[in-house]
Each structure stands twice: as structure tokens, then as C-alpha cells.
Length: 216
Length: 216
Image 1 (tube, rainbow over the protein chains, first blue to last red):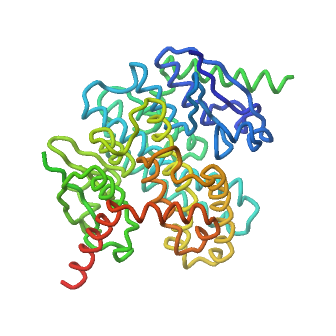
Image 2 (tube, rainbow over the protein chains, first blue to last red):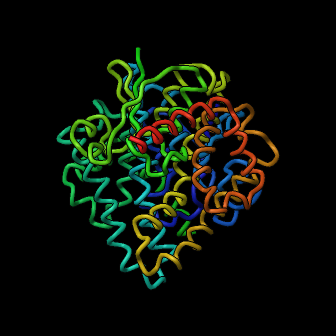
């Protein structure tokens, strides 16, 4: 069955790979599954046809036969369940890898999104300059704890898993802020993720969409 | 094997059932599994013994034999995988239920936590009164979309699932704000969750901890 995902017609990050379809592309590349891409404009994202696929009017979505999924964590989990390569076989190790997937989107990403909201939705407000350092400190709390747990390991729990895939991508969104670089082991962890051939193929594919659309 | 979870020694919500151990208690009640509880103080949560269980120094954690998990979504998922009653058998329906679990913690909870952070971590800041309505509007964006998707159904996708359990508990945190009441079908959805016998047993158990500790 053909897998089709939706992605931004014109990614707001200009092809830097920070949109959430990157997580799904990366997962599909890790398990060597081909997929089709359907581009969605910001306008179309909030229209009934797309809302039928994604109740919150976002990307990515995932279609495969009569199955439709949304939410990048859930899609990556589905891919990891169905194809070998992203979750360990041992039941306990598998449960721990899934824990890191939830930790990535539930705990670590929370203040990172708050930072983005502050910059984009409240960027013109008088308080934002004074608030950003408070948010950054909340991000540092999380990164400090994560850095301690990772220590000098390559991945969060043994071999690379869907938990690492999600966590690396969540952390990537911080790189431009300079905060990630304050934690050398996390910075190296993210770089290890980016160095994976599957990541590189996924990155190239999303960049190609942006390049093609912007020169149209 | 005995299941042991950690909970606040003294819940900041004074037993209103809003702490995240409630999700785990509720899930365990739904699948009729007994569990032990270990109380953790705010101080102990950030000490090495607890950090070994939970890298971010929070509750709940879940211990069962040599398996240790953290992150309420991951724990509820583990329980739902292991015991019948919280995930449908059909593979596609199961994937969709898991999608709602991720949507609860990744998408819907995001602005709700932001509201809590604004009130507790930035409550004394000059901008907070002016910011709260902006946050509330972002919450309304999500709730409006969720309300549209739910429509007049009882649960988000067919029968009650771990996805509903997570979503109901995320929404519960909004009740005191009055925002939930603006969406009558979501308000009724949350009330349906609270009316479940398993929810009631879980609620009583967490309230008992608070009552016992506060009269000690």
C-alpha cells in the first residue's frame, strides 16, 4: 500500500528541516519505506478536506490504505511498530524507547514551543524581550536534566530508536538559539542523529520541496 | 509482579485529581490491576534516587519487576498494551487511539501548560494579566477544533480508549478556568470520563493520600 504524507507547500523554516514532516520522513527512511508527498498550503490546511485528515489543521498527516493518522509522534510510532529498525525487540527496552518518544513531545518540547510562540505570536509585545530569558531558563532546566541522563552514551537507551529520532528533532529546533551548544553532549547527540544516512536523505527530500516551490 | 507508582507526597492541587499520577491510577483501574503507591516529596523528587527513575525529577513513575518507566503518556500506553480494555483490537483503530494519546500531550496540553506556567512561574510579572487572554485564545483554537471533531460522539474514535483517558485528563485541568464550559460537548465528554467507575476509584485513591497527609 502506498504511504502518502502531507507537508507544507512552503515551509516556514525555508527548508531547514524543522517542520514536523521531517520526523516522519526520517522514520520512513530509517525503515526504508517509500512514500508519496502531498503539498498543503496554509490556507488549505484549515479547510474541510484537510481537517478531515487532521482535526487541528496541521501537517504532517499519514495515509496508507484506509488508515489516516496525524500527530508526528503517533505516525513515527506507527511506522516503528510496523517496520523493523526503530524499536528494540525486548519488551522492556521497547517500553523505554516509547517513553522517550512521549518525553520528547510532552516534556522537552513544551518550553521549546513556548519559545517559538513567544517569538512568533508575541514577538511584537512589550514583554517578550524580558520574558525570553525566563523561557530559556526553563529550557535549560530540561536540557540540563536530559544532558545528565544521556551522559557520554551515544543514544538515550542503548541502540538508536524512535525515541532518539523524536528527541533529536525536538532539540534541533533549539540550535539557532545557541542554547543547545551549552550542552556539548546534547549537541553531539543531535549531530549524531543528523549524520545518519536516513536523516540526510529525509533532509534532502524536504529541502527539495522548498527549493522547487520557491523557484516556481 | 507488583506495580508501584510514585505520586506527590502533598499534591499541589490539594487532591483535585489534576496531578499526572491520576492518569496512571485511572488506567490501572480501567484494566483492574492493583498497584502500590510510594509518596515523594518535592525535595526528594530532585534527588539522585528519584532522578534515577525519572530523569526530569517528576511524578509519576512506574516500576514493575526490572522495568522502570516515566512520563504519564508512556505509562498509560504500556498499561494499555499489556492489559485488555484500553486499546481496540483492530490495528487501524488501535493506531488512531494512540494518535489521540499523542495529540493530548503534544498538541492540546501545550497551551494549557503554558497557562499554568504563566500563572505559577510568571504570576508576579507585570505582563501576565495582559498575556493570559492571549493564551486563552490559543487554548480556544485547540478546543474549537477538538469540539468540531468530537461532534456529538461519546468518545473520540468509537469506544472509550487510552486516547480518551489522556484527553479527558488534559481537559480537566481547564475546568476551573471556565474555558471548558464554553464547549458544551467537550464539557460533557469530560463529565463522561469522570463518571466512569474506574475514574471514581482512582480519584478517591489520590484524594485519600492528600487527606491522610494533610491531617498528619
